[in-house]
Length: 199
Image (cartoon, rainbow, N blue to C red; front, side, top):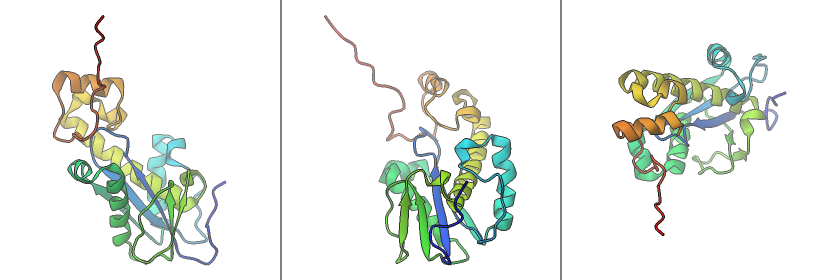
């Protein structure tokens, strides 16, 4: 059972990101402010839900949320400032676009850079504990999965319609055979480093 809030009578924004461990594509973050009386029974950590359930929940979240926004930071920016800073930047960008200013930020994970003067609470595995973070995780994941499925049409040999950019065997075989695409993160280890041993 997800908790409806961290602090009672407080405007809380849940924050989560997806795509940090991917070899290609942007990192995507979402910020969601839910009302205290929201009613979304199936709401859960996006990783624990099927694709069809996540897709069904997106409209429910958007219709019931007081405010929400999804933001992405490109693979080139990731290469420039590193993936951790890019994740924070994506979250900050999502917060910038909220129509309501939150009084407290609930951040999935254990690290965050301060946003304006708004206090924040880092919560490890928060997407499985707090409703607003779970909602953010669903919006971010569905957005990014759809984006990678679209890019798959242009680059079908990496299997992005299935792995959404994560380093699966098929993805790495595609890189080995066809080389990296314009969407790959060149600061990442795209292929495992192979060491030859000589006797």
